[in-house]
Length: 418
Image (cartoon, rainbow, N blue to C red; front, side, top):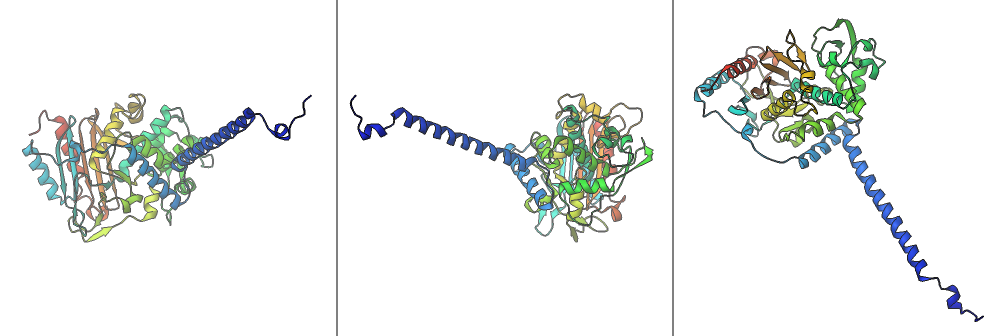
């Protein structure tokens, strides 16, 4: 047998070299793919995971706001413009009423999907010489409860909740919680009591812990209406449990983005939000001598109940979507949430029944007053939003709530508006 040379003995077949390189390339590719997947999972976690501290919470809100902004399209519609020239008599009359109240804010009136009146009054920021406009944002206070109601109903549609589920199922440490249902909490009939008054700013998870520690059930008030904001903080906490997602993430992805709400934010982002008006204190509206910024601890504690800022058009688009069932898998879910047709008008799902004409919401706090009324078909509405209202000194003399209600009745009943 012919003796092999040293070179031949040590030379490996070429296909083995290629095989080794191929394995290396595959391994590197898998590692790269895994790294990319981990990155996406981590980014999603940063958007959805419930933050504990204030710093983490504010960072999560900013990230969700940015992602939502990138997903939405920017457009100006009739809901964002001053209007009223086509019905001068109605316009003059409403303007006169609001002027007499020294109204500072924006008033929007829609009939059958058409804007028939929109006018802004006064200053959003006197120091910066910025006037209120149709795109100005206001702290919406308790109007937010209707939006938390929407999120609860969506969780019910997805099978994550039932109206008959009890508070005890999620927080067994709360005494008598087995007697309180999701339905009762939505309707403020669960006997829940408790103040959300932390002595410092809190992160989202800390807010839930605070609420659970301070809430209690008064069994003597079961099935009786008693307006208690902590009901909706607890609903936000339950939503967090069943979805394993931050309330803020749910709000952006289930409401702001799909409804293309370009005039919506959270008050925690006020430093970055040039559209947000300042609230003004005083004995009467119109002096603008005492601007106020909501305390951070008050803002965070209103999770689910009153820390959203919106323009009037965004309020109308949102309550319209709720009433019409646009954000539900089944349009009938709106009726399940709002319970229309009950013998006695009531509060349900974050809104009051307004006789048989529609639904109504009202919020006051941090020197803002907000009122919405929307028809049962969602096509007609009145939105008043003010940034110069202090309930302690201005209620009821300077409130525009009654004007909003009267205007809504007039617009719903009228065949034509002149």
